[in-house]
Length: 336
Image 1 (cartoon, rainbow, N blue to C red):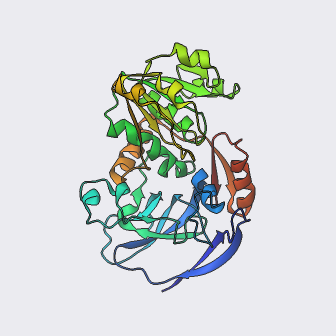
Image 2: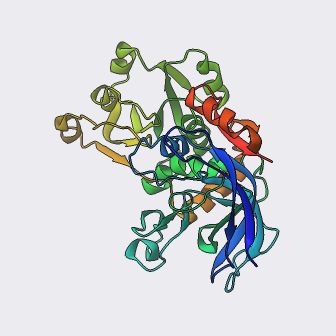
């Protein structure tokens, strides 16, 4: 039977989200419907609402940090059952046949289907996805704060697996925001020595409370220079241009600077900074389902949860403005 969905959508760049209804057709093979209990507001949702990246298909119903329970399953679904607690992140479907999918890197599938671009996302009471993209939530993960793990959490966790980060490595985290605070918690639990760079003095105590060993002023060029070759991995979690060469100088020989923020300008890097020290600069989008499941198990084992501010779905525009202001501590979540 068709399902009537109550949702929120934006019809123009920067517009207020308005309630509306639509119908989902009968479930197809391999699909599931999720009753949405909560949905994080990622800044990429705001970027799509505002058309910052220039390809928003209006009207748009954002939302890709989804936590809920399986409402119904389509033919052929055996991985989840009605009533299961599940999460859904950036992608709602993969082709399952390309080299990336077969190799376990579904997040790099060229035909992956976004959870909310070109289809209604999680700012709704029901969302549809392929079962292959839906993740069971393990015991020990708090469902009330798990939403941001579906995108932000797996995004900062991916480089630890992808690049074989050691528990003895020294990790720097640029920015203590929605991504950065999760990076600090995960890196500390991984066993690393963690240094946070922030321009907000009041966040220093927060960073230490989350496990940071050191906090440095990101505006202090002398402090950066004093940290020459200090980090095996430097994670940039901000979406603003930085003095990339100054930060690259803090990376150890054969170390890596990994850019996780969606920076809207070219990274102007002097190549000899890379060449003479065999450094690397890289980036990555979210993570594969296997990586996400590993992250959830790791979060459960080490009691890692995002720090969240919560709003009701009927406060959605207030919540989005809170995120636009840059003041949340540290993620914004809609909940029923």
